[in-house]
Amino acid sequence: MTSSNPPTGQPGVPVLEVRNISKSYGGAKALEGVSLALQAGHVHCLAGENGCGKSTLIKIISGAERPDGGEIFIDGKPHPFMTPSQAIKEGIQVIYQDFSLFPNLTVAENIVLTSVVAKRSKVFSAGKNRPAAERIVKELGLTLDLDKDVERLSVADKQLTAICRALVSEARVIIMDEPTTALTHSEVARLFGIVRKLQDRGVALVFVSHKLEEALQVSQDLTILRNGIHVVSGPTTGFDRRSLIKHMTGRAVNETRLITSPQLEERPVLSVRSLSVSGAFHDVSFDLHRGEILGITGLLGSGRSEIAESLFGVLPADSGTVEVEGKTVRVRSIDDAIRAGIGYVPEDRLTQGLFLEKSIADNIIAGSVDKHRRGPVLLDSKKVSSSIRRLFDQLRIKAPNVLAPVRSLSGGNAQRVVLAKWLANQPKVLMLNGPTVGVDVGSKEEILAVLREQAGNGMGVLVISDDVPELVTVCNRVLIVRQGSVIDILEGDGVNGTAIEELMAA
Image (cartoon, rainbow, N blue to C red; front, side, top):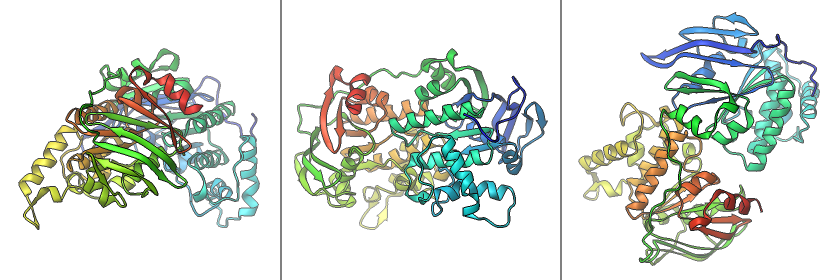
């Protein structure tokens, strides 16, 4: 793969290196003595739990934050600190999870606009700059529709648009923050193909991900942070999943299959028969027992999420029946579902599950006001405080106190707040869509432990996920959904990674 603007630099000298970087906020150390070296044509995995300092380090490299101490080198030349404009000039680009694209502009306009702005051009001509977008798309062998508005793109194509934008700006270092979170297996494979082409161009890439198997697969070098401290760096070949987890958490994390025992002698807590929603899924039937964790999986678009949304009243069913504890319930709205004892933690917790500007306390109690009343109008303040404190402690929400705004929390802690909100409502059935998406391995273990605990207390838990290790670790049974139909139900020893992956891909 050739480029009209190949990366420059000296052989063996890191394209970018940071040495002994330190940063504090109000006396709290975010980074202390962190070092990182990026080689041209290499993918460098930056790993660590939420709050370990990854985001702060990225901000310092990209010029968004100024370090308190340490040095930055570009091609071996020292830079006391970076500014955003200087970082872009040096070829450093960050692709964040939201991609920072302009939704109302076309793909071509998004690809070229920031490079035009960086050159301080006073007039932007889409036609004049279009050839630059065409060239990059062609070089990468992509099939992006340059005239399509970005808001109409899939997540995968938005990501490719952001990569093309970085290359038009002559990027030599591209930092990808959780690039595969919302991608299907085939889209991940496609992205990794593009990553290999970027490597051929001599681009140095930083890959930040909680998906450890993907990180090990795609990277050549690896750096692990823990509590703001540089733990270890080295070739990826020197690590496996177990050693990665131990370095990240400081302890061995139990990922063996550990399931609760459902109360099969009782009637199902949830019974679904011949449920259908036109264009989404059809003739879905299953039972969920008290104390059981039931998984529902399938490829993106299989109908797995729509089944949960129907049970929660977001997509009212066209036909079929739903029973909770043997009683037929009519779920035509979210209020119907809540009254029936059904709770739902959505996939997009930040926009659908939380009030970001409100405190942890307000969010925890938001869905269970009726259960905390003293009389018809007044809330029982002691009962409210007791519930908030109990759930805050039980779910180990890491925050200064319950008054901290949810916006200030990491992804793992935000997910715990959503869980706390529903547990305060004491549902009979709790459905969770992607319960550990975007959270680190330590938080993942703790969240799954909470689900086991709730199931052990008699709750019926429904987990919608395409995270195969997660399903194997926590689920009693797994429903496989394809093209809107349940094609198989795995249970016992049949709940294993090979069986799930084969049925999903068939």
